[in-house]
Length: 158
Image (cartoon, rainbow, N blue to C red):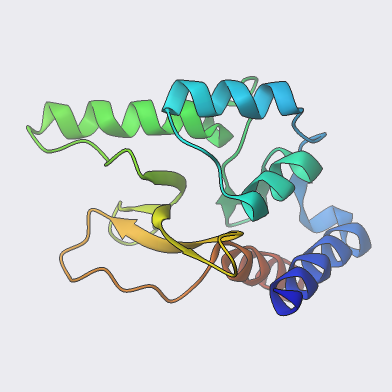
């Protein structure tokens, strides 16, 4: 757990040190997070909640992590999930399972990058990242914080 907290804190420092590389929100309130949980009928993982509390959402010149942003629906997880499910229904495909939280669109395949609530790690503080839909067996390469770090590091490296 110490390692994942340290990586999360490194992300915070990158965002503070290079504010020109990021667009972030003011931070979500407990009520806003509770409303999202009610609408999606799930519990947000603790590390993602920390991200939401601090920033609400994050965008760089070429990447985003969706969160709570009703004023910019392109960065709002509830809006994006609803639109994605509409698209799946129009193609007679199954909707995103309720245990997945879409936080990003994968560039190459139009898959959602999701937090998998059935794949928690670091004492259930962190959710693993997966793709939906996926043609292959679910394999997880990142946790949320590792993905956040990759997005932040890429933004300040370019």
